[in-house]
Length: 509
Image (cartoon, rainbow, N blue to C red; front, side, top):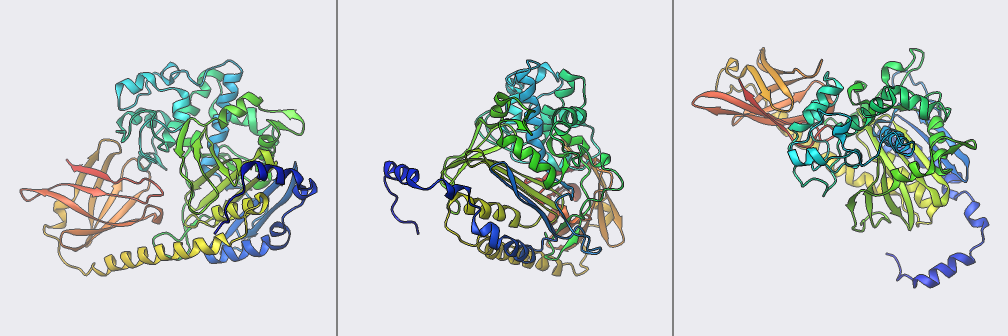
C-alpha cells in the first residue's frame, strides 16, 4: 500500500533538493540484478530467445541477447539478431507521413479518398470524411483486429485488402472510440507512393533507415539476405508446450507490420526519438513531424490502472501515449506469430528501451519493460514477472483443461448426417470462400484466401465439432453447423484472439 501523498508543492520542493548526481546513476536493478531476472523470467515463461537494449542520457547502457534463436541448434541471440518487430513498424509509417506533411507534400487531415479514390468505409458519410489522421489513429469505429483473419498471411493484394475495408461493419460511431486497425495502416502507407513516387518499402529505407544507419533492418522478409537467419518463432498457446510456428508472410500488410530489425539498430531509432529527431547530430526527422506522432488523437482510457502507475492512455500516430509514475511515456508493442516486442521512450528522462522475443504466448517481454521503467522512474521494487506468472498460469491451466475435455469427447461417434452432407463450398462476405471436404472420418476446411491455411473438424457429440487449425497459432475451438429441413446451411468458425477476436459465419452454397 502507498502512504498518503504529500501536497504537490511539497513534492516539487523535495525533488528540487535531490542531488543531480542521483539521476545520472544506473539503478542497481540494471547493474546487479537484470541478467538474473531476465534468465529466470525466460525460463519461467518458456521464452527461448530475447534481445534487449536500454538507452539513458544518450548512451547505450546495455545491448545484448539472451537465450537462443532455435532450441534445436542452440545458436545464441545477440544484439544483432533480427526479429520481426510487427506493429512497431507503425511508428515508422506514421513518422514518414508526418514528415511529408512538414514538407508540404500532404496534410494529415486530407481525406484518404484524395489519394486512394476506391477507399471506402462501411458508412457512406464516414467514407466522405475519413482522413489520414483518422486511419493512423484507429478511430474508424471498427473493433480491434477486425478483418485480420481475412488479411493476416493471406494472398490478397494490398489493393484487395483496402477495397474490403468497406465490408467491415463498425461496432462504434466514427471518430468516437479506439479500435486497432491494421488494414488502416496499410492504407495510410499506400498513400506514400501517391505523393513520392516511391513504394512504401523504398521510401522508409531512403528517408529513415539509411539516414539512421539501420543497416540490419529490412522492410520485408523477402529482402532479408539468405545469409541472415531470423530466430525460429515459437508459441505455447493451446498446448502448453513450446512449439515452432511458421514465420509470418504479410507483405500485403507491409506498412502496418513488415519491419525486421535488431536491438542494435533500434537503438538508433530510439536515440532519434530522444534527440528531437536527430541521429549523430544530423537531422533525420523534423521536430514538428516527430511531435505530430505524439499528440493524442484517440483516447484509450483515462482511468487509473490497478497494477501500474498509469492514469491515462491515448493513441497518437502509430504510438501509445501514457504516463508512468508521473512521466510522459511513449510506447508500442508488436505481435507476429511467435515473436512479440515492445519499444518505449521517456524523453524527459532521456530513457529508451526495446525488447524483442521469439515466443508469443507470454507476458514477460512487457513485464520486463515495466520492471526497467520501475527501476529508472523510482517505483518501489516488486517482482512483476512472478506476479504476472501466477495469473497467467491459472488462465493457461483452465484453457488446457477445457481443450482436453473437448478432445476427450472425440470418441468416434457418428454425426447426425453423413459426412458428405457437410462438404461443399462456403462463403463469407468479408473473407471470401472456404471449402470443406471429407478426409476419412473427419472433415478438412480449406480457406481459399490463404495459400496454405487449413483446419480439421472431428465430431464430438450433441451436434458439436472440434475445430483445430493446422497452424496452432489459429487455435482449437468447438463449433456447430447450421441446418434447416435436414440440410446444412452454414457453419461458424473462430480463431485465436491473437488473430481476430470475432468469429466468422459461413453460408453453404
